[in-house]
Amino acid sequence: MNRSPALTLPPRPYLPGQTERPDEAIFEPLKEGLAPAMTPQEMAQSAAFLGGREAFAQGYFWEAHELWEAVWMVLPPASAERHLLQGLIQLANGGLKARMGRENAARRIAALADTALREAFLQGQERLMGLGRAEVQEMRNQALRYAG
Image (tube, rainbow, N blue to C red):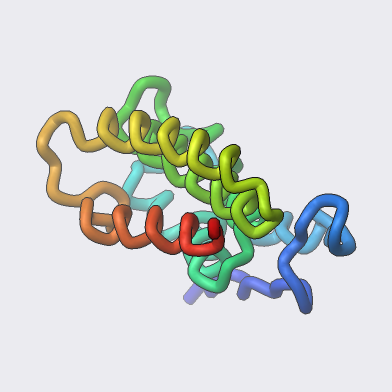
């Protein structure tokens, strides 16, 4: 059986200008194998997507963004899944801004994420890439929890 590489997070989340930037090479093994020929369901089980979810859940928003961007880049243009990833990436960016004390930027980015996520679920799907609307809403709440 082919095991996915494990996510190894730095000791602290990267906050530009506040903490040391991790070597992006730590994410490369998780991104390997992503290809446009993969189905969205296969991408949802990829080490990059799942690693992004884990990083996000632990408040490592920059790191989640790095992993999810690799998935976003290989999803079909204008697909519901690409809109979902766009929204998740924006939530990660909003969470990062909130952690940095940039509350107005966090709220502005959250509004952009809301637009992308509405577009993702526009066709009435209950779940995309293993995430339902309620889970995505909880992720939004988590990202903004850092805003004062």
